Amino acid sequence: LEEKELISRFNHQKVEAQKLLFEQYYRKMYYTALRYLNVREDAEDAIVEAFIRILNNIGKFKYEGEGSLAKWIKTIVINESFRSLSKKKRIVYNEDINDASIETNEDIEGNIDMGFLLSLVESMPRGYRIVFNLYVVENYSHKEISELLSISVSTSKSQLYKARNYLMSQLKKQRAYEMGRY
Amino acid sequence: MKWEDIEKRFGDFVNSKEVTRTDNDSESLHGAKIWTEISYRMSSKRTIWAYWWTAASVIGTIIIFSLIHSSTIKQKNSEIARLESELIYMKDSENKLTGQVKQMQDKLDLAQSIIPENKNTQTRTEEKYINTSGSKLKNVYPATTIPDSIKNISLEDELNTEIYIAEVKEPVLSHSIMTDELIPSTTTSGRSVQYDTYEKGTVHYKIDYGDMKSNNETFQRSWKLTITYP
Image (cartoon, rainbow over all chains, first blue to last red; front, side, top):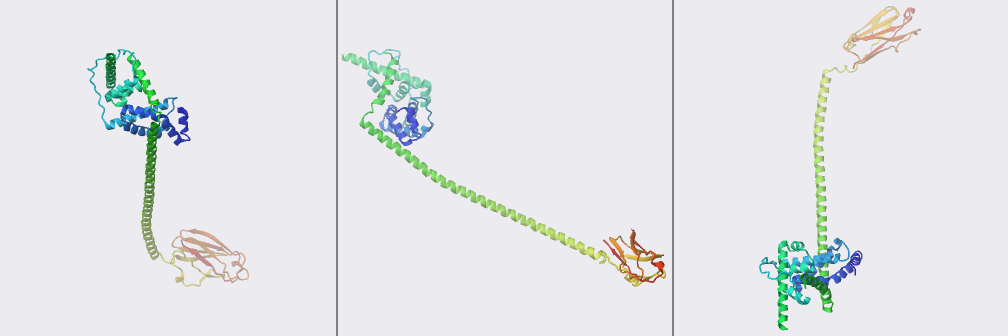
């Protein structure tokens, strides 16, 4: 169902439209929340809170073309995820960048298994993971990340730098391991 | 492969994966569970909001009625205070008026005690009998009946004319002389009464008998002088 059609249904079939909206977006939003919270129950709670917020405020949403509704919903889900995260545990961002040993302008040889890369991302320290996901997956700028996480722009940049270094080092290790095996 | 390309592919992969990885029955059940939770929470919020709204409405209504009641009581108290104030003012006015009436009554009593009873309105009737054979004035009343306010009444008797002069002690309001009690003889025509002058407390009347006297007849005539004092 197109976003415009879905929004128009809120005018005369509110209850049905609410359920349609939920069914259309909840899966994607659930895994978005899970990506930041890592715990299923926490992601479910965040999704419940986020959709209550979305459905209560759908009247305030301004349609600006296809995809704007999804973006608006995703923003609320991410905000709710971080609200949940900050309630439970303070996120510590490691500012030490002296351990950087790999430059991100290096090329990686061969194909990269995205499933493996995803498992690497999920295994990263929380601070790295959050900034990396926001920057790479959600396409947030460092300024937006700094505002969302209440950190400085330089901290956001350093966390991304560390995440990249971490992932590249892990990928290189994996590649070296594979080369050794064969 | 450049790292930028890896990140782009990773982003696309994650986004597409999030859409496809949930297409199975267990995830549908999972979605239903979350939706049930959302529906319950929203209806609970609505119910709680409805309770709060109802409670607030009741409290608001009570407050409004209390305020109206309070306002009514205040208005009534204010009205009572105003009426009491008016009553006090009216009592004061009554007392003042009573005092003024008493003062006026006292003044009136004092004035009445000072002013002689017959001073306000004096009515005096004098009757004269005229003998035409001569200028003889016959006053049928004793002199004591002439009031103090009239000094003297004199008659200047001329041929065919009598001038009566009544000297009074103070200005008069009005005065008149009537000769309608004239007892006519055989010829009574030509009679006239003329008001002449009034100055300085003296009333003059000149009565012209025409040729009545020259007829040398005997007749009797009475006249009445009325003087009204202010």
